[in-house]
Image 1 (spheres, helix red, strand yellow):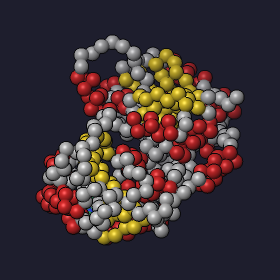
Image 2 (tube, helix red, strand yellow):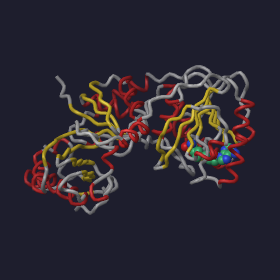
Image 3 (cartoon, rainbow, N blue to C red):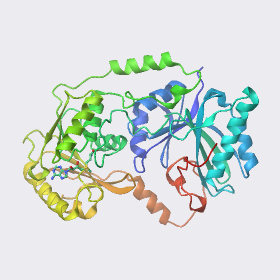
Image 4 (cartoon, rainbow, N blue to C red):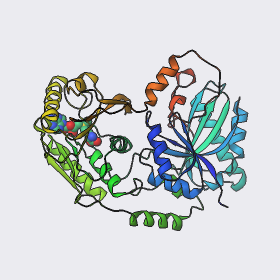
Amino acid sequence: MKRREHYFATCAPGLEPLLHEEAKQLGLMRIERQVGGILFEGSVEDVWRANLGLRTAVRIFLRLARYEAKNSDELYRGAFEVDWTRFLKPEGTLIVDSQTRESELFHTHFIQQRVKDGVVDQFRERFGVRPSVSVDEPDLRIHVHLFRDRATLSVDTSGGSLHKRGWRAYQGRAPLAETLAAAIVLLSDWDRRSPLLDPFCGSGSIAIEAAALAAGVAPGSWRRFGFENWPGHDAAGMAALRKQLSQQVHWPKKLRILGFDSDPEQIEGARENAASAGFESRLEFELGDACQFAPRAGWNGWIVTNPPYGLRVGDVPELERVYRQFGSRLRENCQGYQLALLSGNRDLSTLLELSKPRKTELLNGGIDCMLLESRLGGEYLEPRENPRKERRKRRRQPFKRGKVGGGQGGEGRRTHGGQTSGDSNAAQS
Ligand SMILES: C[S@@+](CC[C@H](N)C(=O)[O-])C[C@H]1O[C@@H](n2cnc3c(N)ncnc32)[C@H](O)[C@@H]1O
């Protein structure tokens, strides 16, 4: 019987229902939705499949220990007692990251230091050699989460954010994270056969993620994962899984995915990215002004896009003109199409004059955004579950004592003493 363990897959705020659905589709077991991600139970092979196959997950943590840690000694002892030889060689490298909330231990640098001490002292005692700390390319990333004096120790099975798929050769000016690009394609309910168009395609993230989805290319197929560095990792088993997944790739006949941008450099970059993904013959990128957007009538395809917000790309008066004219083109030339548009600027998106679009709140690189969806010339879309809005509503309600959640991300980000998560660059030696 294979050992089953507890995993926590994180995602961008607002995408929890989507990640939950993806995990169900992948056949993961005992999935539980939490703030900032999902918990699931599974074997080592399940976490290989999850890393390879979840399009909206950012990292997948394996939970190793939960214990009370009111003080530094308790925290150290708990870390010392975990068998780290499963994840790291004595001469390997590591980094510890932490979050803390409502706990006696509130200094994230200190927490990281004590956990790191517990890990390296175990190796020194057993082997006379100890792993060293590496900030940039560690073999192992350990995460400590302290909440009300209970510590949860986890290791990052992904080995770095899963938005880094490995196909991006060209960065672009304001690229969408690959995980978010995949999310908006999934949220658009694209049928994976009809034409999909992105009139503000930039580096091509939406088109490339859409193509991978349509053909069933695993989003992790271009990269390696943290667990592949672990001693005893079954490399032959993983290679067999990768091969099996690549044999399942199937390109729908006559699939058309088109990207347009008014900047020739973006078009070159999008083509470079498509080539790097191995999709150059599947995608079409052309120079085009969204103010003249006129897709083929009768295609009744999907327009999935992310126009500039005026924060990182474009100046606002010029963008007002672009939004107004693009809105007119949608009304005049795109009847029968379905639109999913991610906007980070409410004033600009109002200029599109969409009639009662469905709105979903999302976060893009720290910017509050809204996914606006509309069936152009068709009936209104029902509102969907909106976790960010619902969470805000709950926060406004009077405090009630109840069950304490144990999420690893999400609200855990608000930490004691004003410290924030992601302090992995703290001095650890
Ligand atoms: C936010 S970026 C899109 C980023 C893209 N989703 C990616 O992941 O790389 C917006 C893009 O719109 C393009 N753009 C601005 N005005 C345009 C217009 N009138 N017509 C077409 N593209 C335009 C910019 O060149 C930029 O690449």
